[in-house]
Length: 180
Image (tube, rainbow, N blue to C red; front, side, top):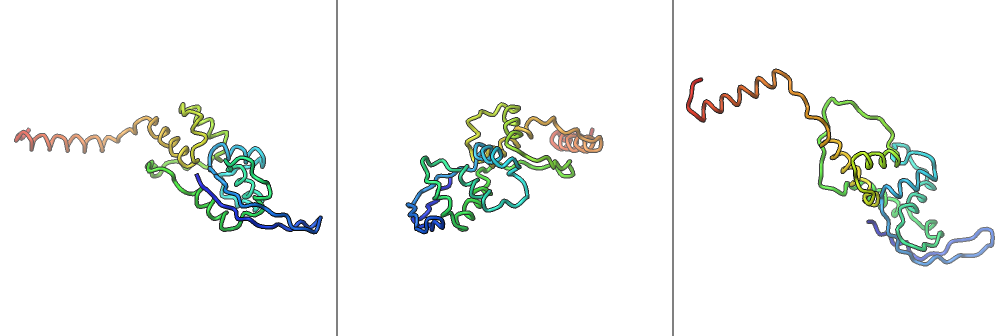
């Protein structure tokens, strides 16, 4: 979970020609499937894409990430670029020690990953729905692990099998001091 402190500030109201005070606010944020789903349902576009988000979309994603209750909506107008940088850094963190080895030369999947697709993967791999509140990168790593563990074992080529048998035979000959 990321905590941001939005400092107390005054916003100028053009229409009424006066300052509006905004109290300091601590925001607790989580980059999760829940926040992703909220954002995608509002904007009707894929969040996990290479496309640059507008300032308004970014602020709205921070709003969707917010776990803190009863936040004054004006607080989001006080979010600075340094707050956005902190949020982006948090979104990029792996949040796991696991690594899944990618196959070399395998097909590249260019499928757009939406919240509904992630929910489908959770259902297919029997991942409990409580995990929708995890940091999204941690959940995606769990899905990658489930996918890797459920793949059928890779078939070995004849050359590889012959080489392996020759290595085993050589080791056994050495171990048992045998010639045949």
